[in-house]
Structures are given as structure tokens and as C-alpha cells.
Length: 115
Image 1 (tube, one colour):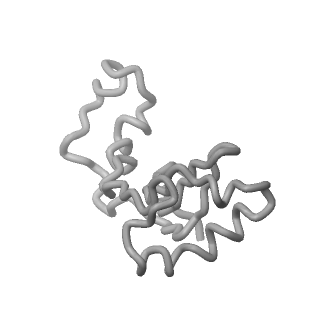
Image 2 (cartoon, rainbow, N blue to C red):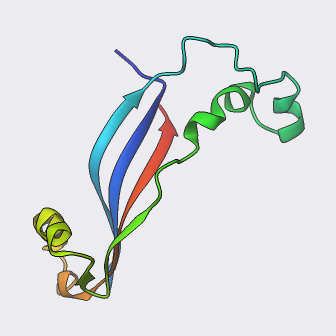
């Protein structure tokens, strides 16, 4: 069955060869059963230059997760975090030459989008 929007938790890895992402979790989400949002007005889409759909449901895409820096300049914030993520980061970057040893930052973040 379909969904209305997705919430994805991911790692954004910035390294010497560019930027890569690793999807950690993908949650399928649905709009509230109560379709008439009390904050929505029919003029909102006209005033803001958005489609009516975006005006009514755009607030669902507001990210609430605060991004966390897990690794900066090859220094992990803690041993437990390193232990948890080191293997998946290595597997993602192993096809680059030396990218694993040249990690600038690893940030855990949230991304939301309509399906």
C-alpha cells in the first residue's frame, strides 16, 4: 500500500572525493485522518506561490530531527558511535582510493519528501 511521504534517516559523508549518503532508516508516513488542517487557508497557495497540495501538506516535510556530527576530521565523537557505523561507512567508501582515510565529516541527518 502506498504512503503520502517518507522520512529518511541517513549519514552524509563528506570526504576528499566528494559527498556520499547512506540510508539508515526509511519510514513510510501518512497524512492525518483529519484532512482539514486548521492552519490551512485556501488563499495560502495563492499568496505563497505554491500548489494547493504543497500549501496544505508542506508542513509534514518540516524536518524535526537535529543533525548530529558523528565524525569530524577523522575523529569520532565516541567509541560506541565509531563501532556502530565504521563498517557501513567503510563498505560505502571502499571503492574510492583513500577516501576512507580522508573523511572530513559524517553527519546523521533527516530528509523528508512527498512520494
